[in-house]
Image 1 (tube, rainbow, N blue to C red):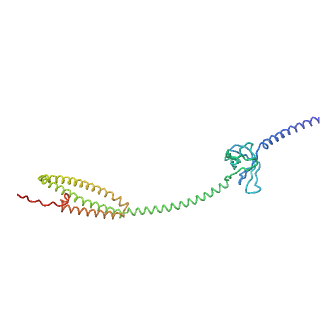
Image 2 (image 1 turned 135 degrees about the vertical axis):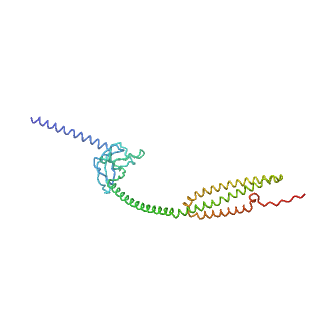
Length: 316
C-alpha cells in the first residue's frame, strides 16, 4: 500500500517538474540565446520598467530587461533591452520613449534608421532622443499662457491708442468740413461761376464782330482782280481757321465749366493750392481782357498781321 502511494507521489512530482524544466529551457532558448542585448540612455524614463515592450518601426521585437540610473552619470537613466536576433538595429536608429496610443502603457520605440548604416553589435548603445514629458509640457503651456496675457494687454493698449488717434482724425475731418470751410468753398465756386459768366458775353461779342467783319469783306473781295481773288481765298482760309479757333475756344469754355464742377473735389483734397489756382485764373482773365480790347481796337489783326496800306486813286 505504501509502495503504491510512493509511486503515485513520485509520479505527481515528476509531472510537475517536467513542465517546469520544459518552460525553463524554452524560455532560455527564446529569451536568452535568441535575443540580442542593447542599452540606451534617457533623462526621463516615463514609466519604463522591466518587461516593457520594445518596438522597432512599430513592431514588437523585444522587452526592457532593466531600468536604473547610470553609475557614471546619475542624471541619465540606463535602459537595458533585448531584441530578437536579426532585428536590423543600426547606427542611425534612434531610441525614444513612446506609446502606441494615448491610453496605452509606455513603450521603448526604436526607429528603423537607414539601410546604408552599419548594424549595431550586441551590447552596443542605441542613440536616443528625449521626448517632452507632461511636466515640461505643462510648464510650456503655463509660460505660453503668461505670454498670451502679456500680448493681450499690449494689444489692448495699442487698440486704445489707435482708438484715440481715430477719434482725433475724425475730429480733424469734422473741422475741415465744418460750416465755415463749406461757406468758403461755396464762395470760391460762386466767384468762379461769376467769372465765367462775365467772360462768356465778351467771347460771344468777339465772335459776332468777326462774323460782321467777314460779311463786310465779302462784296469787296468780289470786285477785285485776280490778285485780290487769291487774297480772298487766303482770307477765306484764315476765316475758317478763325472759326475753328472759336470752336476750340467754345470747347475750352465747356472744359472750364467742367473744371468748375470738379473744383469742389480739388478744394477738399488740396485746399492750400486754391489761392495759387485763383491767381492763375485771374491772370488768364487779364490776358483775355487784353485780347478783347485788342480785337475791339484792331479787328483787322485777326486776319492780317500788318495794317493794309491805303488804296491809291487811279490816274486817268
